[in-house]
Image (cartoon, rainbow, N blue to C red; front, side):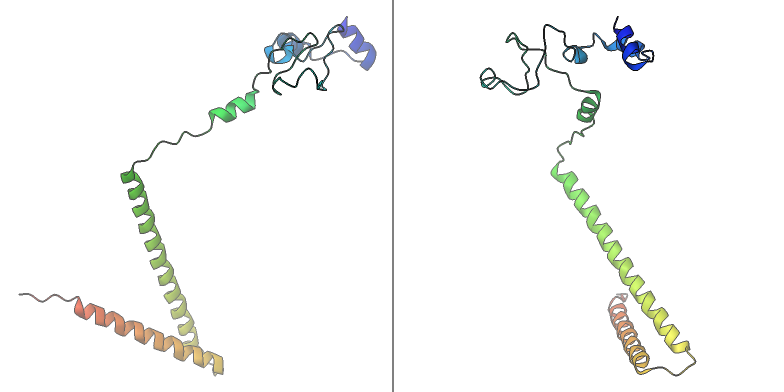
Length: 166
């Protein structure tokens, strides 16, 4: 009978009958179906539901209907939340030390890149055949003095690190 009404209204056959047969008695959809004698209203009645919780639904006779179960996506979302274990102090300290080591390596790498860039710039200024502008010559002098200072500092530290046999 319902299929005939659908055909008369839409002028096509109801194509989702297999889904309807599967889901019509499913718990999630039982509360959604209404009959002519039991019409559910989505509006709240202020007098009858003041003491009731907002999550429960009442039908026309004052009985509490079954609450709608959690959907598939919500259930999966709850299951995918990671459970964090309590890390011990030793593990946390180990992680801190690893991060500190990585940070020091990154800083040293950055410093090496800076010196390489300065060396390339100085090399391009030295090999330039045209006369240098005032800015370029000042930069050239500054870079040369920086490299001389760093070389003397390295020599000083290497001289003190030499160990003499006793």
